[in-house]
Image 1 (cartoon, one colour):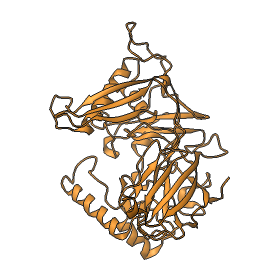
Image 2 (cartoon, helix red, strand yellow):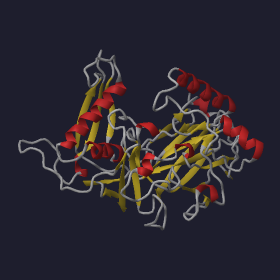
Image 3 (cartoon, rainbow, N blue to C red):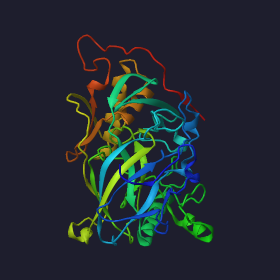
Image 4 (cartoon, rainbow, N blue to C red):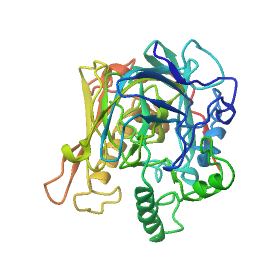
Length: 417
């Protein structure tokens, strides 16, 4: 096993650990360790809410989830010799749930969770159709996940870090804050908001204290969206065997990671759509000097996907076009087309006995494939959602016999404001 450079004690909160991680992006957050090119090491990660979501049958914790504290990130790790303009090469050697612990109060100890976030607290891809809070608990058995809240479904997880990235430079951070602030100003009262401003409340900034902490907390960017540095990309294929090439913006690169997922569908459409958990990641790092210019990777990471995807051979696909549910035509709106494809899949699964919310949770957590399938034929884009048929206990393919109803089980817990 590689040396553990960021250990986590499961009996203590994230802010009470031997090494302090962070939950904001800023170039002045100090590194917790320095690694050399060619080194392999292990990083332990806490799930993104640091234990605020519980293994129970209530969704009140999802309704009240403390968004200001996310994400609980391990790092930063400085890489010797990395300089702005280089590419940081990161290999994911292994990734999994909290090791040697198969039960306990933290997600990753034999279980994880998926949440439909309420519109008043983050929302999700279909928040106008699902405005309330719901939750599903998933139990792990090897690489398999199943849930008492979503009966008749078992699938193989694609374990991956939802968030990994390098620190921004001061200039890049200022660009983020300017452009996201300008977007918020176009509709400042929107719910959910158009973007998240810097927020000192709940900020965790590594070893910073005093005036330095106050200054950085007022400037630092929230970790919710993906950006040029990688960040919260939520790419389900970034799993074991993946090689990522990250732009370097500060000396040492300052790599951070977290937000581990046992499984996720493309898009993580419920916002907390993956099966969230804590765990570990084994990494190997290297540096390509001058790589940003050499390969034209001036912004946004590129990667070679992992090689441990589950082997599903048959898929039921649903399509959507860029027409709203009330019949308004939109011009090549691929985002709307993907929403409509998801809604069609949800409606279809209700014919087999699932509630709409259970179907929505399936699309967020199971390894579905989401694709923009046609983006040139005016006025309609076409998007598709591919659902692996083997994850269901019943045959969900259309037939003359009609849908087979699933065996009744517990419903997904709901909480409302």
